[in-house]
Length: 209
Figure 1 (spheres, rainbow, N blue to C red):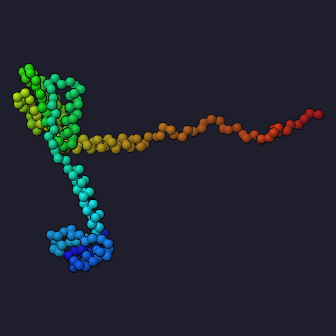
Figure 2: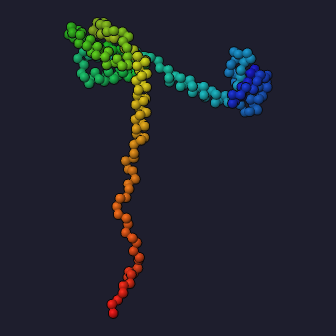
Figure 3: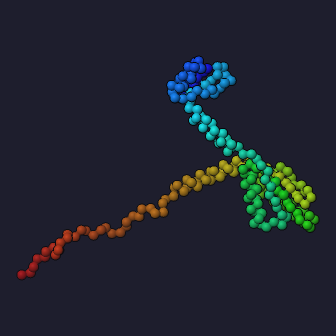
């Protein structure tokens, strides 16, 4: 087998028994890292540390790999401005993290006779989400529900993330360059009075005769 040392140095081809003996002499383990090659490649290392690093890399990879989900947000045709802004922010958050967003317009009673009111809301969403999304399914009316689906526009999302990172870096640099509010004050008053000799009666004066 071909053996690699703990520092990455090539130790050459040797018998398994010799490689295992060398690893034990160094207080380490012999781990096969490429069994499919000829000859197989083994490395001398601390197996516990190797396994810990391997598990850490797996955890980091899982964090970075986001499984896209379909998130649904419901609207009413006569939605208030404040509620609209809250739901719009929710949709942006879903899309920014890579999820799909299903928007459902819910009609009640006579609202079904004025479906154009809900359609206007959906058209407004298309404009307000244009910076982070693309329309994957156009509005469809099914019973008393009108639904559409937005998907994340990954290129636009990446641009926004880079822009936000630059703005954050600029703000941090500007903060670092600010002078402290309690800077050292400079004494601009008069110089201290000269030191007077101390004595019980002060300096003696000549007496008139």
